[in-house]
Image (cartoon, rainbow, N blue to C red; front, side, top):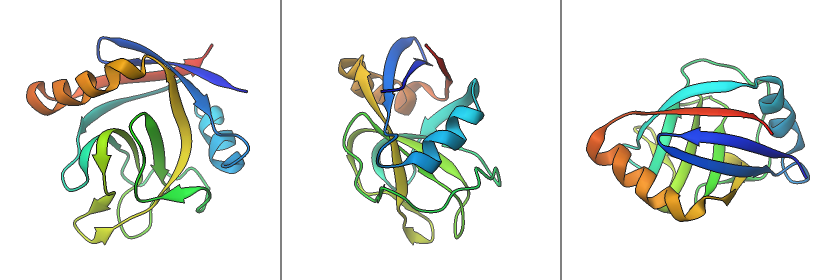
Amino acid sequence: MTELKIKAGPYDLIGRLETEKAPQTCAAFLNALPFVSEMVHVRWSGEGVWMPLGDLDFGVGYENHTSYPAPGQMILYPGGISETEILLAYGGVHFASKVGQLAGNHFLTITKGLENVYDLGRMTLYKGAQPIRFERI
C-alpha cells in the first residue's frame, strides 16, 4: 500500500493510492511528486474542489473511472473534451464540466484526516483558493 502526505489548506491528510485499480494513473502521479497546485471550488459538479491543470498530460487513459466519487476520493480526469484536472469530493458529486458529464480515474482515497475534508471544501467555497501539496511519506 502506497500512502501520500497531503497538505491541503490548513489540513494534514494521508491518502492511499489505488495502485491495484488504477496502476497507470498512480504510477504517473508518483512520477510527478512532489505535486503542488491550488484547489478551487467546482463549478458544475456539486460538493468538490478541483485543481485545473490545463493541458498537462499524465499520459494515461481511463481506468477505474467514475462520475460519482465519494467523499474523500480523488479522481484524475486525463483531458480530452475538457481540461486535465484532479477533483476531491467532500460531499455529493456528479462530475461534469461545461460540456457535460465527465468521468475521472479514482486513483487516491483519503484515509487519515477524512473528518476535515468537508470543512476544507466549505472553506474553499467561501474563502477561495487553497494550496495543496502531495509528497511521499
